[in-house]
Length: 247
Image (cartoon, rainbow, N blue to C red):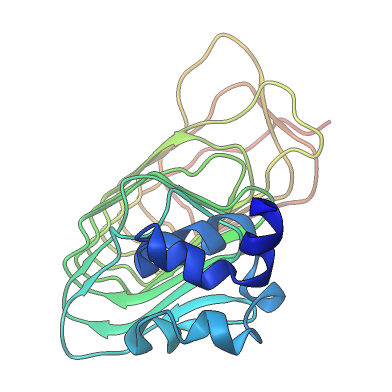
């Protein structure tokens, strides 16, 4: 009988139990993509208008906006993608967040370190975040970084494709390439004028897929014992010696 009452008048029961709208929203976001429940008008009326505005079938979309943006309220797992598009003067991201869809961050201020955000099997794209100084590589997530002019270091394990372009202050990519991975991650590094080193010195062979290094004039160290399992393109990297290590 109780089950029937809950089924017939579930919202009244939740109200009686003191269910908060923010907990309800986080529960939904962590379990199902919005496309599965976004047409439920009764449900949406229980979510604050400023939250409803950012919910789209493919995921959450924030910005641009003049004020700062605090996203620490997000649940640790999103069953969808996340887009945060600036200009936004200052943004606060969760310390850990796993997304089931792609993550796109552009034009965000106040963000000095980016880490703990993953999108396994998807892509994390970071563009034009001018305060960003350090990126911790996301596990199992393709990473694309462009035009982050204060970025100095990228660190961690390279477990998926890495594409970095136009980061003029970047000096090191201290990333551990895998010993064995099928497919091996592709590396594309372009127009990073101060980049000096990619990888670690190791006693064990490491692998990558396609390797593209273009216009990195100060690059003088590339992962030793590197096995390149794809095409190799190296142009305008005069400080780097011959790159070997094909199949």
